[in-house]
Length: 565
Image 1: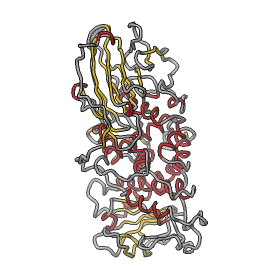
Image 2 (image 1 turned 60 degrees about the vertical axis):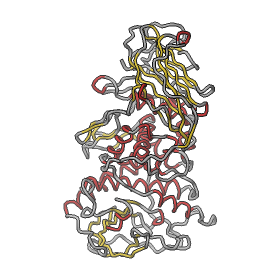
Image 3 (image 1 turned 90 degrees about the vertical axis):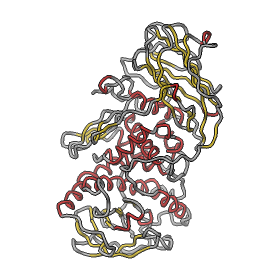
């Protein structure tokens, strides 16, 4: 499947009309509030005449109402509407009504076929416990990071670089079989000092096994070889290309990994920012401080399947290593310790790291969860504000953040690998991503700088792309416009795992089925701020069909309709 060149880098985000490929037809003005649509065959004045795959978009920011008149000459045309509350006020839910009627607006009175309960008032999101897929990986409990960043914000301003100053002298990497001491918190956050043996040492990686805590077990030599090679030969060089060079606060030129059962009392794996703050005057009491780049992992003998295989461990390392790079480059290098970051921004980036390094597996379950539970996803909640994990919508927000950042990466041009798996294109998506990570700005401010557009426009393009991407026959593109598509998925030559995303990606005996779409009659009639409903409907009659969506003006409605048949 060949997709058009993304020569319109960043341009798609400038306006809701997007940018077009060279063979696109001129746009035709649609009725309502001044949106646009691709040209099609015939139709009355002010009606959007859409061919299959073409879209029309209308906004209701001024009135709270969107009206789209569609030309339906056969009376059998099929459509999907994206209804977006483009507001970024975290926590609000907006009621809306949707109606489909035959004819233009002058014919609608008394002819509404479908009307949802009205109300159109914002209200706080109610607690709603999700039943999460047990295969969803649990990673870093970001609430710990939130607490740590609050402490970091109090670092003395006259010490802009509180690492490598007054800390312990550099210690060379150990030899295999040597034992060193580490600090690690147990499940009660009590710091334990343990002995750990260096069981594998390479030119860039040291793997330690806890020899103090019962139950750690051992890792077979061939599995250690696979883990060390996967991380050292694939993950490490690729993450440096895509996210930037990591820190080296102890000057040993190594990344360390500590396998301990105590890790699992918090999460499958995590990293701690305090390991990188090496100035003892700044290290708070009661916090483990190991003064090195360190990934905390659960030993394979403790972790349940399928996360105890070498490939799964490498994927987890890729996820956590991105957290370490991000903290160093976003917070440390920018003296940005007091900034508020959303947990799901960095979770989305770490899922992207799993993808780009060629070890995507566990994050595919998270992505599918987000698509299956699209009504639980709020881009406002996933990107804005300095917020921690959301216990009710965690799976949807993790997967949604990945889908969002992957889309932006693809719109920036993505990357290319040669037949040997070498990254040969680094000046498009990779350069964009490095700037995204290195820039001191966070959240929506960073998104605006990265795309040159307002959050509402970025959200509208992204949610429309999820509705349209690969929805054509046999997974072909439904639309030729790059702004409505992710880049094609291709298997990594080194790992044979998929790199990239399709809304219909098969994996592990199942597959994505696109974002959940409701028949318009079955819609629940409410939207998270920064969230969407996808509504399917057919032509009301031959001639013209009108879709009307109404909500509170504060919701900042944006409605995009694509013709599917």
